[in-house]
Image (cartoon, rainbow, N blue to C red; front, top):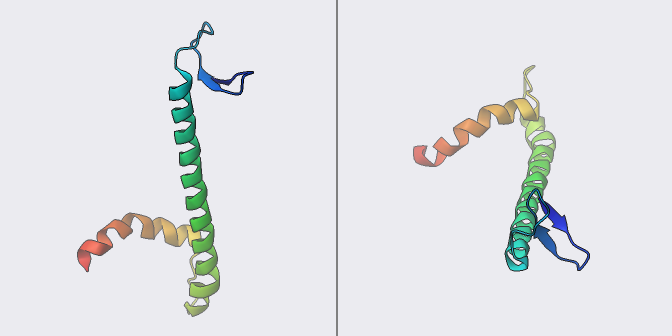
Length: 88
């Protein structure tokens, strides 16, 4: 388990409480965790922007009774998206 120590370091410990990973490796693992959290936050920001643009830019251009909400439309688009570049 990863534990924050009194000296300000993050260290990995086994079930008996013995440190099993050096501070350098722990620091690297922590930086990778923070990096991945940052990527997730950017993806979340991008999805919020995409959702807003769908609602405020695309939806006013859709005529007729069928106006799918973002989640429904995206669930259809997402699996098809990787095939688009090959079709162009």
